[in-house]
Image (spheres, rainbow, N blue to C red):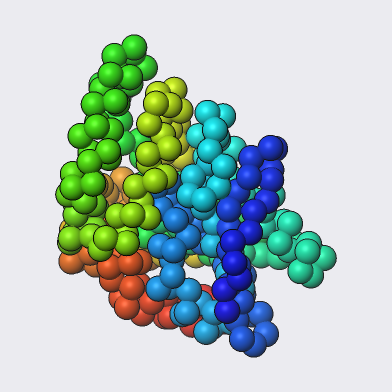
Length: 287
């Protein structure tokens, strides 16, 4: 059963989330975080697997995105995002059972960096990590950072919005690269408004690009909780192969699986495969 939209205000920022409850007793608590540009609906096909396994699920938009409040002061760095979201989960814990619980954290894309930071901040409150197509490195190469910091960035950004977002047809073509297939009209209609809100906010986009993907990779390698990483073999955003530095250096203890035909949104386009892996993961590590 999924409750309707709920909002919590943390440091003056309204964050949108939903809660899905199992029909029977709560055995586990799961937090599912959406990447910027996605809404809580992106996890809709995965939720039945979780609630069927007795999970209380909190599905949340990234602070400052989705159906939450947008402003030029939205948190861009992962540590600040993580503190906001622990505030949400602590509130859910205290309102439901008056005690803090341990959570399984799940995320997609750049939101994976946020749950990694959550695990770094409160490792004893995290039971496991489950990441789909994680973006844990900056999308801006160091050689291009001066351009993003420069005054010319605003004009480049406005041109990109006109070409890729403002035009529904071109936006659909861009989504085709993301999904690895032609997007449904409903998918395009859901993803376009959150991005359109960024138009005209050059400084906010600059902070997101320069700060919104960075993770303390050296500390990440020290995390001790179980971690599963699913990767789309047809992902044209971050590449179709698992980065060697992720597998060998930054997260060497994770369990990795490659979904050969999946693009960047495997939880939507290949939900049956994701649910199969998740079912085995729950049986092996959660029970």
